[in-house]
Image (cartoon, rainbow, N blue to C red; front, side, top):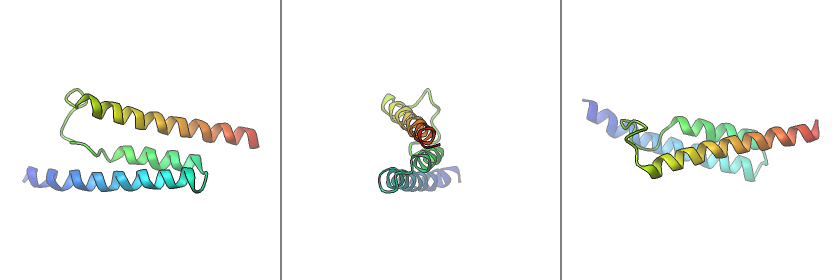
Length: 89
């Protein structure tokens, strides 16, 4: 029974993750709303696109690099939004 749950969970997470990434890119480039982009990309991280059964230590190095890059991008966009907000207000 557990294997059928995992078979559904991973594709579902990949779809939701991809949709939040696309939304974040749209918000950053089309709307120039960096805070909304940071939020969307941050929410996307909650939907781990990789094997959710693996612990952080067991993950391949490229997955760790990707997830850390994603987190850094969220922080960068958040900082950019706060910086732009300070200039206008």
